[in-house]
Image 1 (cartoon, rainbow, N blue to C red):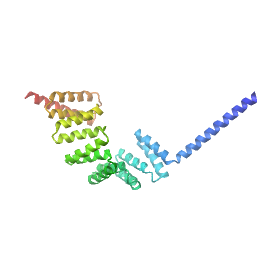
Image 2: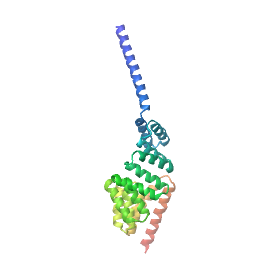
Image 3: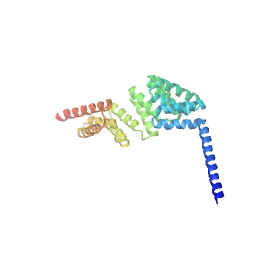
Image 4: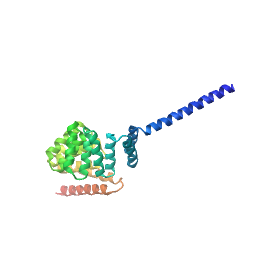
Length: 262
């Protein structure tokens, strides 16, 4: 019995040693796998651990300098670090490898826009949209034309973006702003309400909706929304953005008070 027990222990010991050796071998192989390094970078970016992501992206590109997705992610990492110039270089390298990658063109356009190169940005957004009706590019084109005060073109692109992805809060909000500029308050309210359904806690959307109701002279509804915004802000740590929204909401309430006194 003792011999049998000893034999079993030896077998288990050998099996465990073999398992450990296999795991070590697998770990070494993974360290040489660019896709594995890239996937670790993706996880880091999702956790907003950008410095860690850079480490894995650099390792990916050492192993495979033509890893287009890694170059695209590298560009996004630079954007998160507010380094648009380096982001442009990464996106350009990505597109030199895969010129048909629409999201790469859209990201390059965003980097150019950050640098103030609006013509180059528009060109890249157009390329992205032409490839596969990229809804991010459609939104970015709509925003660009909105800033240029070309409301008809802006509306056309934001509608196309929403046709492709109807759950985009920012696109519904932008469509509302465009309708506001066109003097179509009912359409603006409808767009803001759709955005609010998707993101009930998005206070900037609520503010735009409250302003639209004010323009419609529905002061009771506008006041209700502004009061709700201020109540929510009271529970939020103050910063420059929340203070600006608080000031604007109070200004609308002041105008409501003035309008209802007449």
